[in-house]
Structure formats: C-alpha cells, structure tokens
Image (cartoon, rainbow, N blue to C red; front, top):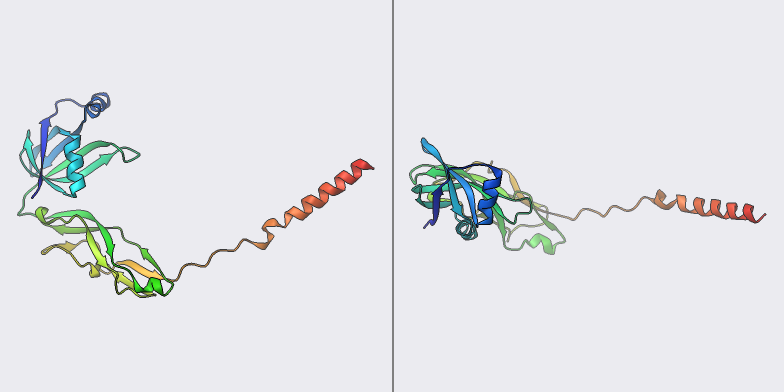
Amino acid sequence: MADTLQVEKRDFTGKRRNHRLRLEGRLPGIVYGHGEEPISVIVPADQLRAILRHGHKVVDLTGAASGQALLQDVQWDTFQQHLIHVDLLRVDASERVTVEVPLLLRGEAPGEKEGGVVNHIVHFVELETSPIAIPEALHININHLGLHQSLTLADVIDLPSGATLVTDPKTVAVHCEEPAPEVEEEAGAGAAEPEVIGRKAAEEEGEEA
C-alpha cells in the first residue's frame, strides 16, 4: 500500500520564496508525466520524510493532483540534512518503470574465516518493473562466498516477480579476496635526516672556532 502525499498548487518560483517555504516546513516540487501539463506543487516536508523512512517509492497523490506518482528525484542539501525539492512522475500500475534501488548483502562469508576480505562492489542496481512492485532494496546472500570467489547480479535472491535487471546480470557485485599487502615506507624516506644533523653539527663547530 502506497503512502499518501498531500500536494498544494504552487504559483510562484524563485530561490527566496522557495527558501521561505522550506523554513515553514514545506518544500517545492513538480508533478509531471503521462502527457499531462506539469504542475508546480508544495508538499509537506514531514510527510515526505516519513515516506522516505518507509522506503516507499510510489505515493498516492491527493489535493492539487491525484493518482499515483513515482518519487523520481528527491533533492537534499549539501549535508544531506534538509529536503530541497522533489520531482513526482505520474505512473500507472499497468505500465513499467526503470528505477535504481540499493543492493545489500546478507549473511557472513566463509571466506572471511579463511583470512579474506569481502569487497562490496555494486551498491545500486537499475531494474525495470511495475510501479507497485518496486522493492525497497535487493539482496545477495554471501553465506557461501569463499576466498577468491565472486558473486554477480545474477545471484540477487529477491528480484520481484516480473522485474528485469537493467544493469548487466553478469556484473560482479561482491568478491572475497586476501587483503592487499601493506605498503612499506621507502627506505630512503628518512635518509636525509643524518645529513641534516651532520651539517648542523659542522656549522656549530665552525661557530665555536
């Protein structure tokens, strides 16, 4: 079940007015798609934060716009603390959309007990699916990942029914390898120190003379 997002029509633009809007706990956005005219909107920041916490990507719109929309682009400030803007793409349950979702690891790799280190290479995956079947995340089980072994996106364990990976399934997502050897400091790194000391001693000796 999708969360509901209240939208109010926005008839102004400009950084100053949008900044004032954010200080009021609201933020600017736009609703577009499906051949309809784009609508500039205002959305409650707390509602949007709650939706993001739930991990939902599709919302039911109410107010100045209706129907379902995909959270196409959510913009944050530089420090990822405050919401700035949201793009809402109208969608229909009967169509397919391409989205990017996180890729997480499950389990513990036996290869770690053999002295290996698990390297999580791919953190986000693109897939094509129905708007109502967009997962919060996809997962790969590493419980059988041994030393010098790899897993690809084809090993994702919870791809939604009917969904297809846009990112190449052959892409290596995680592997377990021996840790890289530590780089030793070059022997010549401190070679200049005795010369400096020796020169200083010679200079002091000359001053005493």
